[in-house]
Image (cartoon, rainbow, N blue to C red; front, side):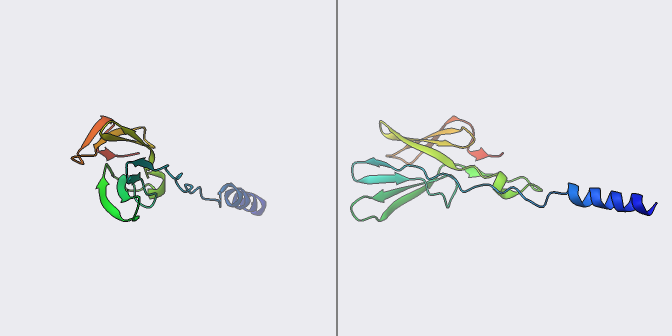
Length: 123
């Protein structure tokens, strides 16, 4: 009986993983320059696009493209949805994220149009 208890304890102890998977840092998104304005997607904030003056390196504006809604009980880092690419097209900036959602930001009005996905991301 004692051997059985020791065996069960050993199995329970060694079957539990002590390594917790954490998400790696998001990849840096290549900025897009149009004229004297550089558009960036900072990895410190999800769903944000910033416009910077290329000459002075001063922030011109910051725009929220989408928000991330977290589900209770799940680790936040596995629910994060970061921007993966920026692309200039006519008078817009096309924004793609890890959830494969695609948005179009009008650079004149700063209005966001959803091309694929939703304005509220959930993983």
